[in-house]
Image 1 (cartoon, rainbow, N blue to C red):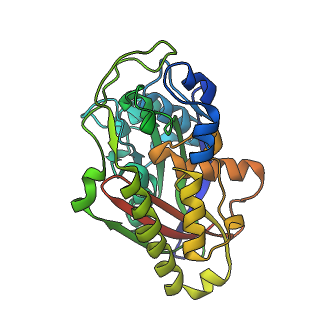
Image 2 (spheres, rainbow, N blue to C red):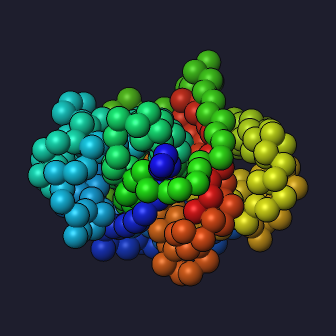
Length: 325
């Protein structure tokens, strides 16, 4: 009997250090009302001693609990804030958990990273050559922020989440996908390197280039291109569209999600959100939302709920996956 890839386990880890909008107001010209009204963000988690591989390892440890770690065929980590240029964060996780038989690679598609990595993992498993793998989105976005630039610093947070993906389903779970990129517009959002050798602290007065973003171009990109992507994949899969339960979109800004909802005619009630709690965690955003909603009971593994995972971000990159949980 042919078996198909499905998500069999999920896990998350966020740093314990909670930084509120009021905390940020102590070090920059901003306030809670200004941030919340424009983004929907109330707080975020900021790593104080942990690296991206530390966060990803915390997730991996949970995913492999009660498993023979030697049966893990691959580890994919979606991140744009790896500990090093090389070795990959995935290789560091492999070493930490002892998954000696797993091959490893990082996927850098910024905020689309988890969606792109999940697509890659599903393709690996569907080839029939592999049976089980970990897909993790992990970021320490605080490592590349200029804490004096309120246009970017207030938006981002740190965290990690991921899934165990296995060839165990008797029916296809992955219905369709549509992944896209446009490098010509890539400089609308860029960061040269991780600029902070130590994490955020309230008296942090370091000045560095950090991340640069053209907010208007990114908003227009999300409204036009991301909405079109979502609409097109649903039009191509009418049965799925008619039974769509929820959208798990990248949590960048609640105003962007509201605009996409209007543009796609998908009710905002179907857009699950947690941006207020974590801010923009880039590649960790979609899996964090997935785990939170499974923990809340809104989503259930094995339920065949129809969900659309959508990522969008730097590159520019964007894409959607239609998935039956």
